[in-house]
Structures are given as structure tokens and as C-alpha cells.
Figure 1 (tube, rainbow, N blue to C red):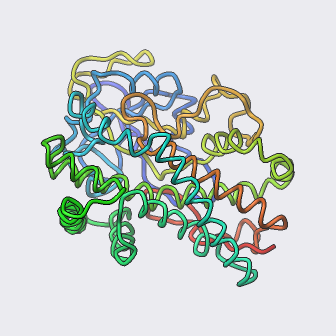
Figure 2 (figure 1 turned 180 degrees about the vertical axis):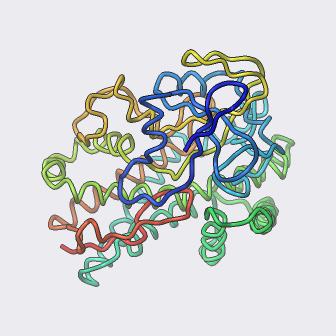
Length: 403
């Protein structure tokens, strides 16, 4: 649906609609081909914002220092949810020099040494969960018995969240990431999470461990990070680690199981797995709608359109990953594809801090499943798989499999 504006282009109303499997949202798909820089109005917030969908335009906007994340704080920008997911003060809603400082604090956590050690731990945990799943016998909900528990264990190990607290954290995650969570409810949940991580950081300041919360607590003691920045960063990493990874990997497994010919070739040559993971990241539409916007600090030209100073801009990475100017037959899965790098983890200064972690988890989970379960198959027809609705991240509600 579109509505005319007296000051220029039409505004496209973009509602959140339930989508199954890897069905692509028709609004951004159409705009990619017809109007790659368009004005949209989302279900919540005020006014409208620009939506950028073309690959090169998305890269331009996300790499442009004139596009501010900090200026979104406190503004009721049109959005997918009634409340803002990311608390102010964290790395996701900061501009340089604060953003640069915070990313430097996170760099060692996601560096080669930590990722190498965490990969070994993840492989051991994956092996244990696979044995437990196999011994229990088919059918099973793989999201519940393998993918979800592994994602939870990894993020808890990395951040330093005690196992006894994971139930509470999971409860907060589920409430915060629903589209029907009101602004008041969202603020209440974020307050609870903030209090939890502030308390955990105080504990780690006295009794440090080899985890991110301990490192951030030490940085706070020397003035390198404030308490709001610490809390916001911990919340962002927790939500992405628990929810986004669980959903994207579960969807990857679904995609592999409905493309048995390509999966059979991959199973016979696991050296191809890293490239296959990249193609799955490109192919799978990970979100319902868009993430965080940016605000132009001055007039910016993109895709033949002028974005005026003060206007909000969203980019839609899944559409950029389907740009026919960049990818051959972009709506087709090709596990051997070797074309432009995908933008599933973003681009520019706000490229996902946990990209290597998410990639590692995906590689370990898929390698374990392909190796341990050679006969893995969906236990239900694809059209009977239930998909999550009313949530920020897309993924199967359950993933029933047999072998």
C-alpha cells in the first residue's frame, strides 16, 4: 500500500506479515527492483524513513560517517516494534569516537585466540548434544535438543552468564524480541536486564573470570567504559547470541534438508562448508523487517536520491543479498556460489562484532549434524513446519527431524 506525499515521492506502508521458510518479504523485494531508495512507513513510531535495498547503495550508507546511529536515541522514528530494542549508550547506537573506543574493548573477545579456544569448547559441546540427541532417538525437535542449547551454552561461556541464570535471560529475550511487546513492557524488561548485568559486572569486578563481562568490568574500573555502555553492549551480544544464532542456524538446517542434492555433495566434501555457510547467510532472510536506523547529519546522495539532513534511513541487508546486479540468479540457493561477499553481518563501522562467533557456531553445528546424522531428514513435510510469527528474527518454531 502506498500513500502520496505533498513533498515528493510516495510513502510505502510496510506491515509485518507472517512469512514461512525462506519466503521473501514482498515489499522490500519489489522496492529492490522498482524503487531501491524509497520512503516507507513501518507499523510503529512516527513519520516515515528512507529504505535502501540495493547492494552498492547499502554499502555506501553503512560506510558513510555522515550517517549517525547516536542521533536515533530519543527519536520516535518509524519502526517495526513499539519499543527500541537496543538501549542507548551501547556500541550499536554510538558514533566515533565512542563507537571506536567500545569496539576496541570488544576486539580481544572476538579475536583469534579466544575464538580458537571457544571453537574447541563448542565442538565438544556439540558432540555431547549430538550423542544425547541420537541416543534419545528420532523424531526430535532439533531446535530444542541441539541448536538452541548449543547457542545458549556458547553465549553464556563467552559472556560469563552463570548456567543458573540462563532461564531468566531466555525469558527476557523472548519478551523483548516480540513485535507485540508494548513500549512500557519493553522498557520494563530492559530495566530488569540492565539491573542483572550491572549486578553481574559488580560480581566480576571482585571475582574476575575469563569472560567478556569480567573484561568490561575491568575496563569500567579504569574509566574505559561506563555502566550504561557496559549494560547495553552485554544486552546486544546476549540477544544476538541467543536469538539470532538459534534462528539462523535452524533455518540453515531446514534449507539444507529441502535441498538434498546440494546437501549430499556438501556432506561428501566438508571442506566446502565455509563457502556453503556464506551462501546460506546470503540466501536466508534473517529478519522480519529492518534493524536499527541511521540519521543523516547532512544531505547525502544515494542511488540518485537526496536524503536530507535529519532524515532517518534504514538499510535492508537481505534485499542487498538478493541484488541481481551483484548475484547471478539471486533467489536460487547455490552452495558453490563464489561471487561478491554477502552483507548478512552488515558493513562498515557497525559490521557485526560477533560475526566470527556466529560463523564458527554455524560451521560447528552443521559439520556435526552432517557427520553424525547421515540420514538426517525433516520428519514433517516442509509446508507443515511452523515458523515463528510476531518476532524480530525469523526461524522455525520447531524443527522436527528424523534419521
